[in-house]
Length: 488
Image (cartoon, rainbow, N blue to C red):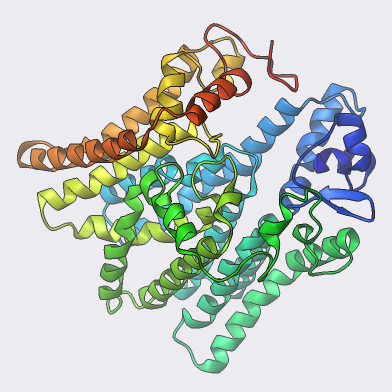
């Protein structure tokens, strides 16, 4: 809506845009003027996309419907940047790990984590993660003397842009500044200089963000969350700093272990980061840059756990997983790769590969739903499986081109199942068959946990009915692309 307002009316406020297009949620209001409550980067980044679409449609406001605008914004602002991020991940991992391990971890990150889920939505979580990953990649190259001062400045600019995409990125961006200072093992004076160069790179995007806050909300540190229009959401952001308070055990436990949305039950392969960090620390003599990197990742884990434990768990919304932890995931990939490479028995290797494969199975399939109500008991058996068996599958490019469901959605289901087979069982012949058996046992165990959590509750049935009506493409029906509702 803000993208439309910027192009149609040349203003960041939404009042006129909502009068033309209808109401929208997640609003902030100041002196009767409405704005999005979110950080503004994606709104502005989508401006050229909408401008081109509007020219194609005739050049007047109100001519471009929601589906093509959001679809193309997803393609260019979340999906394609994630593919670039995968290249950065591969470059990082190849420096330390053998090719087979690199392939497994890249596939896991691409299809078995929240990176997949939020690459397919026009939300800021994966955009911010991609920017943080790119900033970290530049600092890693700096730590290896592979780049000079421009690399530090670019890293700072990327970290600053991450904050303009999602406010919670201020936490990892600040930690990256410390990493810039410590990553070269230089003198204190040089470390301060390096942190200053990193901060200098962030001045422009953070300055623009401060200017946006001042114009819209009256001060450089006044975010939209201080002016929420919906009274029901206001208590989530009261107390502490922007709603961040002292930790609550319930929020921490559910964010990690809830069968509906827990990070480690959706992506159990992430637990391999723990033994991987120990292995990275052991390698610090051979690769000195790994010592500060290990400290960075440990502090990031602690910071993200503190955040998710001290913020209101119920505010995560109808999403896949604890969405605000998406930015942490790129930093866990090198530890996971080290853990895989260190596996010292066929059974241990099988368990590790089973954890990665089960992540792709659970998160990959749930990403084909990607809209998970809070009152569902468990989403794999409560939503995905019954909806798929009924032929209600994800709308996609093939279905818009006439390849109707279940065939269109079945293509993506097949891709995910093939990825599960590759990660869990590829190249396991001869004596390594034991590895495959162990991998299969882990996948079966993770699926069993999700099956046990499914309760076939009224919430499950209500959510299935809702999603089948408003979210999926039913069998035999070609949805409308150039429209707002998607219904033919």
